[in-house]
Image 1 (cartoon, rainbow, N blue to C red):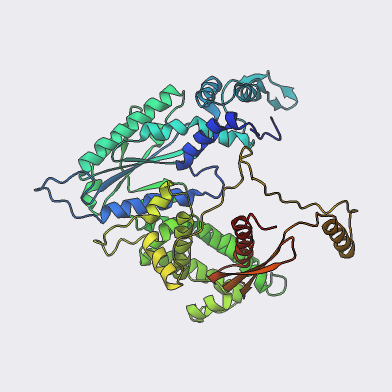
Image 2 (tube, rainbow, N blue to C red; image 1 turned 180 degrees about the horizontal axis):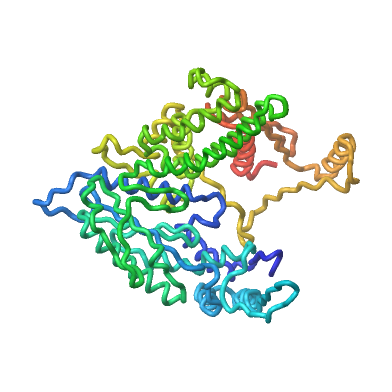
Length: 522
């Protein structure tokens, strides 16, 4: 069925194969609800840091692969016009291999085929051209089809010492080994596997646009490192740009901070032009612009890279936030920096990185146990190098300081599959007909009539949650009124740190659990 380019699959036996295969692409974080580029970058940075923290490699002793400090090669590949060259026939075969119902595959086929285009130049129309490949841009269905189309790429790249990081059509491969020679050999194996997969699927790898970076604490490792990608020789550079983040050899992100500063300086100048004394924005509006327009650009995926950034490099972007704070407050340059930031109510980057690291750690721990980011968040590594510090360590320290302990509540799925049944529980939100623009009194009278019409032997559950200041010392309560008139009071603590939403949900959950625990009550 097609509803606004969306697919609805309601038959359980026809949908299980699709659901299983879609879950299989969980390594993908692009085009997926509640996921972002920060997940992929964070996992990559933390895994590299964990490999560096292992015992130092001793050439005189044979050690098992992966047991000593690792050498890494990061390769970022570029597919030429990835969306535009998806072959319709191969995609149809792919969907059939996944076990999707034939009617659904036929619908996708007819939706993709016979798309025509022509160009108008100064009133003259060209001949029509039929698209025989590519996914329609702008459709909400195209990203899902691309995920299924590229699901086999991760498996094609999976091998010992090779880890793929895929975000939509941006593909990166991290190759590791006890020695640099082993890492180079594995990087070449991955490049050959990716080129073979692209050839089978009629896609083109732009070898000249492929980037290669040696990740190592030893500067000598980066000299003369090359691999071949689709016949093109790729040499290791001083940096590599992946998903908007510029990586350097030691993961100190100095080049990225300088890049951010160049990008944000014009934005600070724009903010200054909005701050005219007689006609400009007020302080609150300037603060909103500073947070969204300036800080927003600085903090792209910042939870993944900012905790690892050297303090001298982080100072570069801190200066831009101070400049924004002076514009917001109107304070002169002689004002102490801590006073300017406090007056502007803008947190320094040093404090922001702690918040961002704790947030990323909490979000990672809330993912399913099989998710790669969660496994990275739950892992541990020795602390051999004091200068290497990532978001996981900083996040754990911050959660400990505010006394937040595991387990983190799991992230709920964005939607319940239509083939899952809800048992005997029904949520009824209808109170009967109401005219457009009904007053509060009319709504209350309609609700009262609706409640009076319900069966007299109904069991009533009233819930409420309360939080002090909206952030701490929460409590939940519920009252159960059984059909025989007996009442029970339920009380549940919501935690020292919580939100009003959490307190309300705990009250509802405790009440429903109590009903399920007493199924024989009248």
